[in-house]
Structure formats: structure tokens, C-alpha cells
Image 1 (cartoon, helix red, strand yellow):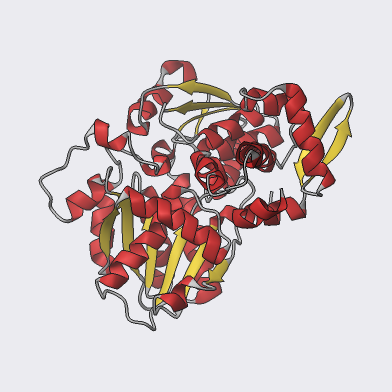
Image 2 (tube, helix red, strand yellow):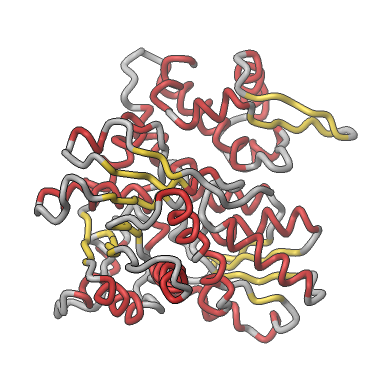
Length: 405
């Protein structure tokens, strides 16, 4: 499905505004299901097929499950996703759209993963990230691409939940070094939310190692909430080897970074990705970077997967009566985008956005189609909707959408 080979975009505005001339965004949103996990989904489903499995089990906090659901749907395989109750609804919606079976287990992902080892899943291919080392192998390709596209940067800023992505990136650059392709790997910066920062706390030897649930429940960065990160020790080890650092970002700065990325760079990132930009701001204020340093921020997933962002952006309109109409159209356009591989029916959209009547759904679909943001295809008795190139461009910069609908 054309996963990988995502762009390294030079910053259009932010870098110059803060005195960093070589700020770069590695935009993993451009993958088929809008996250870096499509690299994993493609490899694991192919591996499962090669071993003649027809069923896959995965416990995750969203992006990996959504990707696996899409690739399994393409291959006609059964996909069972175990997810925590604290999950971005957009990711859950993708799983539903691709006909994955979804079971809610626990509140946070560290409580969910143990259920993937249940005996009833013994004949399933195990695709849970911490139980399948191919996850690391798939994700290290990000390091290879950064090197191919930009050479070796001075810094790479990486969001951390379990620490798995950081371990993957470091492994990729170490392989380049051990193959004598590069001399020195980049310095790494690991980033977490200040409400859930067990790896950062461990790096700085803070006494507070336990994460308080009442705090973590307030976080918008659901994609990286992990109370007991499996790769904590390795992440700390590799950060130190790279001569990098770690940082925890306050929630208000995470939310403002989502908005800044949209308005300044046209990148609509989920909070779990946008915090890498917040880290750049904070570390730059601490004079960590030289103005000539090449700094790569990993943007791992789309803001379409975190619907609260759409609600927040919709409040910026001051036109009476249009706020709710705009947000409804945004939600529908988002669901169509998240189901862009195989399309989605009006009734399926109604199931995902249950607060809206089917008649209203079809009226909004008519409006979106008349503006060229979506198009339809008839398959048998079903009419399926797909996002157009224009619609994709609109979702890359939601501030433009507010002026068009």
C-alpha cells in the first residue's frame, strides 16, 4: 500500500522564527493509515502470511492496531485488536472501518498487553509490539530513510511511550555505523508528556517513578501513555550512548504545538507527535542547539486520530450557527480519510458518529462531494465514499477548511 518513503520536510516558518535554520519534520502521516506503524503492519502481515497464518492478535494503544486492521483487510485475514479504554477514538474508528474485532482490556496499554498471551489466541499470529521483534526491524527503516534523505542529522526528536520507537531509530543508525556507511550517529532526544514520563524520570534519576492515574487521565497524548514502559532501560541506555537527552512536556504546550504545526507548517499531527515540536522550543530556550544544527522532529501520526482537536479548532469560528456544522463536516471528512483504502459507506459513518442521523450524514456527504472534497464509487448495491486529492490537501491544513465549508 506504498508505506514508507515518507518526506523529510524542511520547516517553512517555525525554524526561521526561532533561529534554527535546519529544522526538519519527518512526516510519517503520509503513510497509508496516517502513522509510522504502517511500516510494521506491512511487515507483520506479510510475515504472518508466509507462515500460513490467517488470524492476527495485537494489543496496542491504537496506531499499530489500526494499521494491522487495514493490512489484514487487504489480505482477507482476521484481525483481533485488544485496546485500553484510554485510546484515541479515531484509531478505534479505523479498526472498525477495516472490520477488525475490538476488545477493550484495561485502562492503559500496559494493562492490555498481557491479554494477548491468552491461550485462546495460541493459533493466532502474535503482532503485539513488545512480543514481536519484527516491530523494531520495521521501524528502524525510518533511520535509513532519514540518512538517505538528509544525511546524518545532529539531533532527532522522538516521542516515547514504551520507548520502542527510540530503540528502533538507534538500532537503525547503529547498523549504518557498523556497516561503515556513517561515522557518528545523531544525538537523540526522547520526549514524553509531563503527566506520564516514567522514562524521563528514570533518565534524570527522579524519585517519582510511579505515574499517578489521576494525572495520566488528563493527558491528550493518548498514543504514548504507558505506565510501565517495556523499553525504559534500553531507551535510557541509548540516549546516554548518543549523548542526547530527554524532556517531559506540559500538556498546554502539547496542545499549542498541534495548532502551531497546522498553521505554520500545514502538518496536522496528533498530540503524541506534536510534543516533539514543543521539545524543540523548550530545549532551544535552554540553548541546547546551535543555530546551524540539523534537527529532525518525528511526526508519527495524524491529528485526525484525536477528534478532540477538531472540537478545539471548531471553537475558533465566530459565525453564529456554523460551528457545529463545520465540526460535523470535519468529523465526516476525517472518517472518510481514515478509511481511504477501501472506502466507507454512509451507514458505517453513522455507526461511527452516532450522534448524527443518517439523513444528516447523507446531506453532509452531498455537500462535501459538491465541493470536490470526496467522491463516490458504487460496488454492487453499496455506495462507498473516498477522499479526493483536494480533500487530502484540506486535511493537511485545517485552517483552510474553516474558510471553505
